[in-house]
Image (cartoon, rainbow, N blue to C red; front, side, top):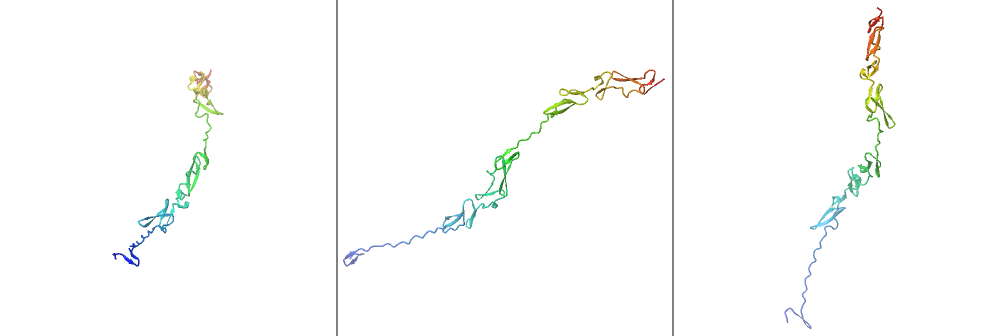
Length: 233
């Protein structure tokens, strides 16, 4: 009989050698299942540990739940509005041309810029400045010692009372500045050529103007001081 053989009734046979079955590998557990994170958070596995993180643009504790920056305007500063869950300036693209925007209590307010008027949400138009009526006498086009008055859109120059000359060219001058400007029987008094005799001579005296000067004399047969009194001798 051969070693390791077994004899049966009909002959010899070799016994088969069977392998011992290996135990199955341990099942890998997903630390992110069931999900351990809060709302609006994602889970990632790291060294068999679950790491929770807020989704982009969300904030808070990812293990309890994340929320966007805002849900309502009241979540934002008063000069911002909640737009697509973010606190943003509501002004861009809101107002019309030549308008300016300010945010009041989360609401964009459009107003026309200074010097403009119209619909601030569509178009503000320039307000033309009204030119003051032109005064043809300003600046004064007349000469000295003149007065300017308007006639329609024209300036009319006139000499002041007691002055003479061309009011437009050279200006006006008084009737006289010295007695030599007057006739020989007149004298220059207060820029006027006048008779110098009145009030100069005495009682019953006579006055003659000689070369612009008053000359007093007592008429014949009266005698005396012609500047005070002429009387009979």
